[in-house]
Length: 116
Image (tube, rainbow, N blue to C red; front, top):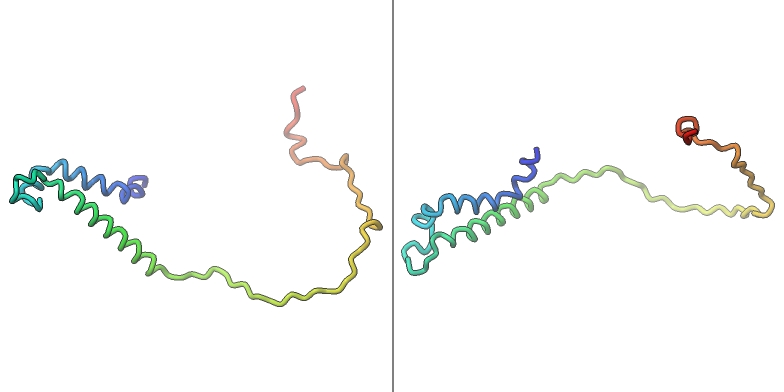
């Protein structure tokens, strides 16, 4: 699975490895400067051309994939008008809030206890 995920990332390295393995064939058959031995290219013109071609192909595939991706709308939220009620705000001084700390216990109290 990891190889399948990393394969597109490693494809430029495959081109460079192919060049190093088949350097004599590339210099003899595929090099643009094979007729001019003075240029001393020995197939080095092949690598940038192939890497640029691979990058162009990958960019086109990505663009095509994004353009042809179906649009999926997961939800739709209707916008409704806000209605403000004119209820009076309660007086906070008259309200009393009580809570008792001693009544609260966590569910893990029985499980997690300090050593004795």
